[in-house]
Length: 350
Image (tube, rainbow, N blue to C red; front, side):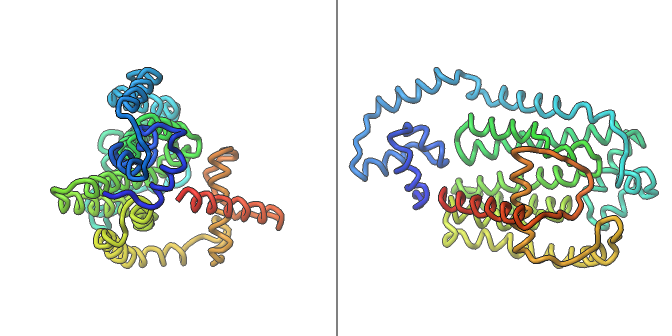
């Protein structure tokens, strides 16, 4: 795959400040591609110097990051350590209606019929845990741990940088922003959806970077994308991520047929989900949720993104219940500024 304009821009910016190896890892390509590009520009590079740079990296970071099994074990340990105290939590909020008072719990026919993987997994958990919350929390932690491992493998394949992949995955594993999704049993839909979307992403990368068996990987990617939507409805936006990936790292003009498969599947899923979505909007309890109203995306999107960035840096306060935000014009102006800076950073890095 030839270098994109954005990748060439990064090479020009980073080299020779960074080594060829580090530059190649930062954009997720082989060193030979970077070497050919630099040599084409007339930059002379000694091969033995590259070897010395690589050896220096190995001495600096040691052999730990070269051992994928040790890295994964470390991530498993971190994931379990942070949330192990949730194993002794009780059923709360939506858990009461979906598990404790649910007369369909333990029966699989209904959930297979409506294709709700989230609640179907509750029924499987009921087989060995009954109404003991310990088993349900154990499944949540297991899903979270699996997501962390898949994230590491995905980032490693995307960036070819073991250290960066480990650090990012470790932050994801222990960040408090995931507390609701992991410690709350009914929050299981979020990590379960993430699990399937990461599998879809891994197979999509395999499809993009191999010449043989592409069709097999493509259908596997579509299949896990479909499962992700059965677990969590917000997974439909994954099609935008695939499009952005091709725009930034791939070739959208060349690979539009692959993206088209996700678009068609998304339209079918949205049409299927639209009925339950209408029911949820009409049947929502205004006293509980603060009413249902349509707000301009020009207000919602900057507020949402700036709020997530704020929680990432300073995850306080965290709460199970999400209420309508009230803010002054000055506060909203600050959120707009943060949002525009975020967009500017994305455009600049591209």
